[in-house]
Length: 463
Image (tube, rainbow, N blue to C red):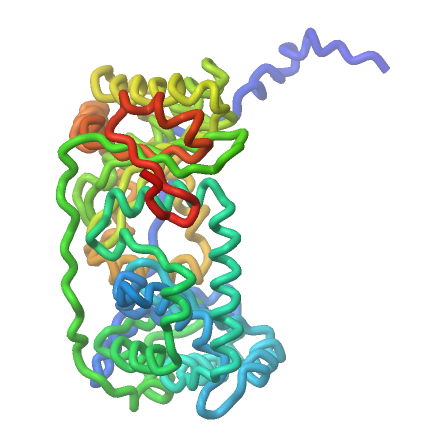
């Protein structure tokens, strides 16, 4: 059968060349958040979603890896890994079997600023889920054998990380940008060996207190029921405000610096460039978000199109925005062939200068904002993801209506504001550059970009 697609216009098929695009940005609204605080200080947040007979919950604690003692870096990570390995009532196998028997989920995680114990259970088994949440959060026993297993895993993972150029670059970069703040520290094999079971118990006792915590429910539950159940399982939780250390923020760099991480014989070079930024609740965050999307936030970014499509230096060049509770970083990265390392760095700086001096087109601006606003509902449509948003709002000190206004904040960013934040925060004269590759081939060529220091893969200075 012969199809004459040359005449497809007759049937209106030409309209299919481009997908239809609505001018109006998608509307996203978090359901009403209802709140209550127990007498012991534990704050409860509830979002009702009765479409499925499930409830997601997240216990958020103001305890991040930044609170690890310097000589025991990795303490909060080991605490997270060991938390559900046994309680005063059940051993690890019993806990796992109980969760699995009702099709539930229960786990924990930690980042620089927060500690999270989270789960999801069918409504009929919510009491069991909260009972287990209470047990592992309030009465873990940290069995020696289980702690040693988790310590060994972390040490093995660290050895694997030391073989990753991306990890080596990031470890050097966070030191350059953040030290003496603990954001700039990373765990070592020695620091993991320094942690005892007593350290885990003391750390848990110090930070796991109701005044330091939030419990978020999202799903098939009402506030009154959430309060009743929380009182049942957490009402006897004791502990007052936490006396937490204060950290010194890093100073502003007075010159560019280049750190080379030596990987002899490496056939690729990893480039990571960065400036220290602001905290997550800074009013420029949304302007930087749009600027970053235009410059390096994906395959449509200027860095990707220039370094890959036009120059052929790399398979991909990107940038990212990493804002934490107390400070943050803006980073750009690529993996290139050794022989184009200098040209690739020059190309990065060309694009940095361009976005600071030339107007952003209306099409670029519109597409960046449309992506950021349009993808937001897709990433946050489940009860678990909405619960996570609420914890972010609490832990990072964002306004109560922050997520309701998110799309508007992004959409109102102008072309002039993109240039303004690029000029303010992309600072070549204070930029940190990390290069991971064969130092013998690279170090002598890099001095034009800043003072060069060389490190080995164990993060020890070579010269």
